[in-house]
Length: 150
Image (cartoon, rainbow, N blue to C red; front, side, top):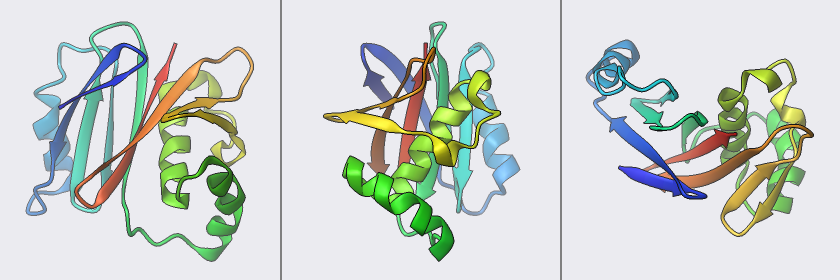
């Protein structure tokens, strides 16, 4: 599967084999990514996804089941931000984690403190000196977010 964010092609390979372990699914997907430098994995509840680009743009991905349980404490922290962006709490979680995974320079910050602005289907992380652009998708019973760091 190919997705596009701001004219950058992102290649995705999914594995939904629940009979395999997370490690087995990840090993299966590694075959497709050996020649690519900028790649990232996510796994959740019987699914694994590999995302990569063919250019020099760093990428992050996070995938979660749409019906994932979120604790009351975490939901309280996510609710206002998710509502202001017009997305669900689990979609915001994916957005924050994908942005976090896309850029090592921001990984010392707690991603629960990240703020985003939304323009249509594009989300931008509001952080000086960083250009991280994200988009949210749904596939089967999962939601996933892709983040590009330039």
